[in-house]
Image (tube, rainbow, N blue to C red; front, top):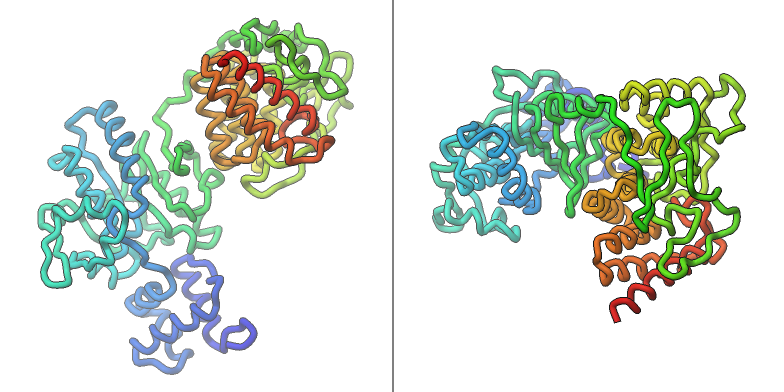
Length: 549
């Protein structure tokens, strides 16, 4: 290989692999070349053209090559956080929802040499599901499946921090460990190429599953294959079922209607329960959001033909002054708790009274960004709804159809920045509908901190403090340097009578703002300057410290 270019014939080998197995071109061509050469040696083949011809019709040769082009890195209870979540959250939820006699159906979708499915089986047995469990395990490598069937391991498979959980099920025989038949009998091994449209099906047993582990395999696929696999994974789950993916695997929210579940260690996915969102479409009067001091904002009924009334003054052009005597700074949802609907404090979107865009003008579109970057922009073009779109949103709100309102507002945009701006616009019309739209947008963009931050802001406005704290912490998990997230968390904790924790959050917000030039715009702060926001955070933390003292 010269200059990063494969010798003649080897590029065609990789093209065949992509066609048959959906594997994307490897980033390291040198390693791929070495892997192909090792597979050719095992096939007693020196001519790459002849090897390519054999590959095209010999599935065993292709399987052997796939073993070289993917990393079979695995050990018992790898990424123990997944297994801890399965034990502490998923299994109790299944038992409560489906009863103790429910047959748990789990699938290890890329099982390699078997450590993952056997870990799942051992955990299910330990949690009392031994007589009510089925674990299926598949892989594209028949060589790996043969090793899984033998179930003989070395210390290398026990190197993880939680691998000792497996030792009671292993018998040492020299340098090897043999797996107990009690665990093996619960795992059904089989061949499956995830890239092919051969699943889910009742015949294969890959259907109506409660739990799927498909970890560290999607990273090898091209985009088209990821999309197909994501759709089939979703279809394979029973309603309410859970999908665990690897830390390096791509987000799946754009490919299938999963519900992302954000935890302290990362994201997993859930297939929503049937009819779970039906209640969102019942016409309900929106709950009035509250200021940080507990007094309500005035909210007009949706669809009334006018924007909600506000009791706050218009947002100031200059940065807000620090709060005085315990009162929040006026004119901003950042320094004054929850923003007033219709006040423009959530970034606008619905035209203000007396002003409207030209009829028929399209909604403004924010610039496209890569996933996860929506929360980092300090400024963005003004987002407005056309007259027709605004009227359609109001009609949908009047009949309680929040999903249609979110769609009309643009909250289901594939562009995360556009979705975020649309949710802000909807929040100025109906905060509860905006919450629903936020959840919908988060399904498509589970790693966008700005959506979690906005969700926390809306929840705070409805005095749903526990949920607001959770959403604020999720935003900060995704983007620890989000200054407004720490400021908002401080507001929430203060309302929950946690002054010490709130003061810490305010200090963190101040520190992040002080790192910026005083006149710099703070990301997601709706035009607030770093110096002014730092002063707000400092005043809040000092006030709480004095109260504590």
